[in-house]
Length: 257
Image 1 (cartoon, rainbow, N blue to C red):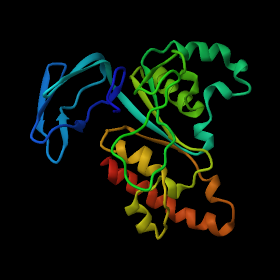
Image 2 (image 1 turned 60 degrees about the horizontal axis):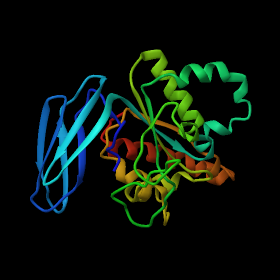
Image 3 (image 1 turned 90 degrees about the vertical axis):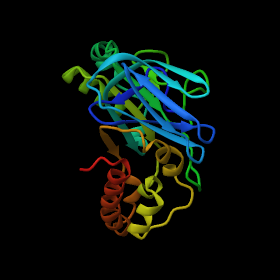
Image 4 (image 1 turned 120 degrees about the horizontal axis):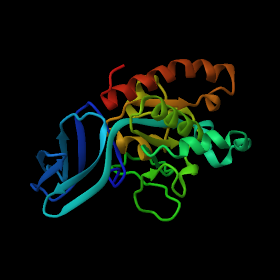
């Protein structure tokens, strides 16, 4: 359900489009003249699509027993914006934003910045799909820059993404997956927690990160640590735990260093 109108796909890497269907159903994905297929196994399918340079917009057809069409797709760089409240803090809440009204008006006009806000959900079991926050409804939604609700996105993430787009003229996709007061352990996979000698029951990882780790991204910007620094002992533990967190996210996304 991350796949919908206005999405950004990571450029220059093999893409992965995935979902669920009836056992044995053949799914064919077509975008910009390239056609790729896969067969549904155990109710799930993953279609790998060839690398593509930055650009767009494109239309994607996903054909099985039914057909889905996804419009206005761009290829560019996709960044995950993660952490706690300093990352979650919304653009509309910046107290002195009036001082930057001219610059905000300039970057609001950048048409190739798209944003996805993942709803805050924690689970004890790994989830297959994410829940998406929108201003008007509960359907999956990538915000276009400047449209109603865009300023509910992370202020840090928004400034980061619009600066990249302005500097390099490459479409930018931003995914907000953050939660105020969260500890790093809440963002770690069960395997990473075990490697760090830590434990955590209901985690944001299971509801907000695990469902999208097959979706290729350029990288992560991270703003977190305060919740793990309430004592010298917890800060010392964090120094090791955070390194393990980074390595496991890289491994789980298959992104290397």
